[in-house]
Length: 343
Image 1 (tube, rainbow, N blue to C red):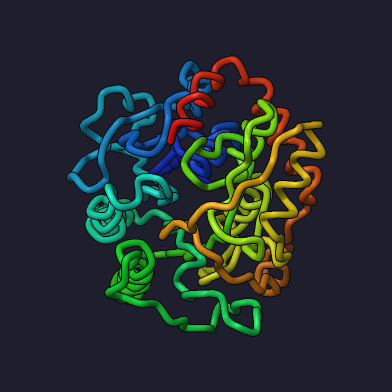
Image 2 (spheres, rainbow, N blue to C red; image 1 turned 135 degrees about the horizontal axis):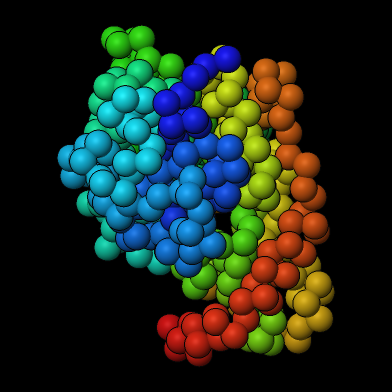
């Protein structure tokens, strides 16, 4: 059994106040000392405010694109970083706003390059296990035959296109991870995450699922940014979190796909949400956005074989959980509804 001077492992999560990051914080804070790092450009303190008083949890507001030394933060003194170091790093930080994609392009580019290199240097310093939250975008557009992407598919990405800062940026970040693994012998894991939904998704960001729910509750129109054939993989957030934790604790390095292999038409999802909420909302189609596009499906045999992982939450159950969460926060979210209708 490994002895840690602080009594627990020290774990760093970048992007920890975001959608995925905050759920990962919820899971890992139970048995570890957890450092949540976020510049709040896309994350929200509201996602982690229930954790702020916990002795095992510390929030640091900082931009990963700027140099930083965790040993210089006095609020981390209890974690004894100078002696114990950092045992695990989950690197999830990258702006993923569909609505603000054009405005965030340089920050996305930096997060995938400078930010990733800064975190890899930290992993080298502490010999920490490192998990990079990559994306299904590394494979490129959905193939015509809709065949699921296997991890040995090298993909096809337009590296000078309108979304190259994210798509090619993730590919560069993967290359950086593999290079540090090869040169410095670090234990690095690449998780390719497919489209995920659930509580704490950004609202009114044109990512649709959470917006569908809030609009349906208020009997407002549901907007689909695409046509009636727009379809996608959709995996409930708790399944993704379970997969990432299993991956980190395993000897596997990946790359490894995490997502649902099922294909869902957004039109049918919108109708299901209207049904589950008893709404009178109509469905309106709007022009597609650059960032939220029709992506491919994951082949998850590798995760199933190596980790015993596969998604367990069915779509109806996941939507019910998402609806219940938004209903619980309805009064807080209500002012956003009027603003959304005006856009």
